[in-house]
Image 1 (cartoon, helix red, strand yellow):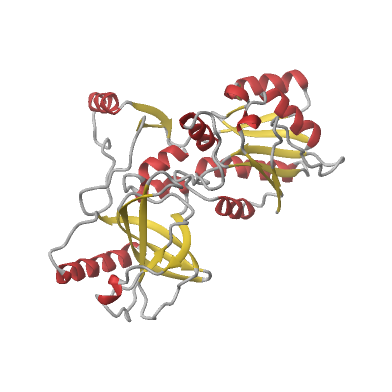
Image 2 (cartoon, one colour):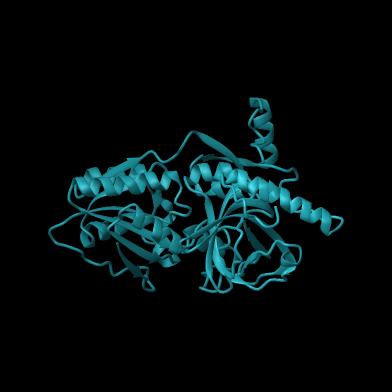
Amino acid sequence: MEITHLTPDAEGSIAWPSFSNDKKAVVTLGAFDGMHLGHQAVINRVVELAHRHDAFSIVILFDPRPAFVHGWAGAHNGEEPTQSNVDADALTGIDERLRRLEEFGVDHVLVVHYTLAFADKSYIFFLGQLTGKLGMRTLVLGQDAAMGKGRAGDVKHIANLAAATGVFELDVVDDRGPGEVRIPRDFRPEAPTEWGEPADPLANATKAERRAWSKKNQAKAMRAWSSTNVRYLLAHGRIQDANAILGVPHAIEGKVVHGEERGRTIGFPTANLGSETQGYIPVDGVYAGWLVDGDNRWPAAISIGTKPTFSEKTGLHERVVEAYAITGDWLDLYGHNVRVEFVGFLRPQVKFDGPDQLVAELKRNVEETKRLTAWHCPLLPYA
């Protein structure tokens, strides 16, 4: 897979590469944050059509996320975010998205630095560039996709343009998932108060109860397979529901740094991730999952807590992520770039009366982690 990074000029124009005068391209575009099942359906369709027509498969990947750029500008008098401003709501970093695209067999990824000037171009101008420069013969989109100035280029308008010009085809993929969900308009992370995986609060609700809940929370309808829904689920500890949409365990990545080392004193040494993590950090709590270092992979009990300090980069309180790898071996991971994967919520963060109660609870967390990861370690030193 070839990766090309492109930055629009001050007017929002891009110097698109030219791949071949004889070979056409099947193209899709978006941020693809999270690479959930809806995204996968679109990408797989691009690769399928490219193979069928002996064409290039091309993904135009926006980074940073358009929602982040527009949201930042709206809150900062039209200014765009800089590289030092971290998008704490991004489900996946750019490296993870590129790795996943390579797994799908995409030929070319064009990483476009998303700017307000670029966003101000009309969808007609943009699609003209794709057909003229990239040789696009087919554009693949999800059902509610929209592009161009004011998001005027929805699926209906693009289909009309394709029919009128005859220079490209539009292929629309059902990327919505199983129905709609209701998500509070301005939701905030809310940690569960009970032990165990949180349930859907509307699972057994009547229609009247659903309407009342939606009105109270100013909830809006959202397709089930959406990055917003995944973000909402992770912000409420519903890891298993989020993973069902992602198709893989949700993960974050970061460098292991020295922590306060209190876990080591009670027999539970942890790998502490630094503040420069990639990926959306779920709400505070203790989770079951995996700690991955290169080809090495260990079941892990993961603790997430919030510091009282405030981060200038993210505009949020700083978070602490600690992973206790369940292994009989001593691990020295300082300085390693590791991956933490989440498979289930275990319990909220609570204050214990003393170290004995804490150790007893940590042992229970380890056993539950082993169960959820379907793994058993007879050499576990502290279980």
